[in-house]
Length: 176
Image (cartoon, rainbow, N blue to C red):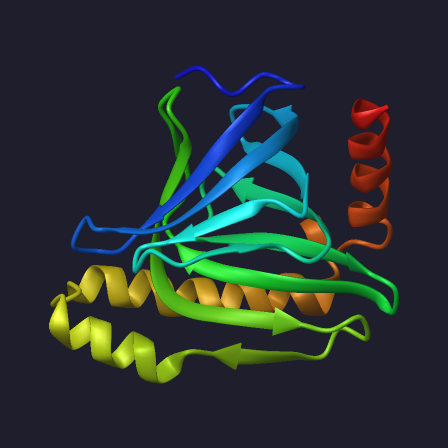
């Protein structure tokens, strides 16, 4: 598998378990793409929802995707510090069209002081029933919630001090 090359603008697509398109983020700049992880940056980009709504992100963000982890992390650069939005979902795939993953509803919102909230548990329960998530998927998603909480607590990966700031500086250098 090839990986998106540094400096390339890509699209990010999330799907639901039943294969339907969930959301598209336009124009994320690849800052690093390896066999293990992809790190991208974007700022005030358009987001297309499956229901036809289109909106623009409000701030610069650094996106972190890992090839073996069932979550991805978006670090949003705001005036009061870094806020994180973490999506529970499959590891990414890259197919030259876009970076893609299946979104499994649960999210974790992390504040600059590293406190966090698990979100969308009702949505997860509803979709689990409607789309008949296999037990194997449910087990993996719940294990990944625990792993993600551990990363937050340990300040690991994208939660490490200065991780987002350093990649944001790199993002700015590409934009000239």
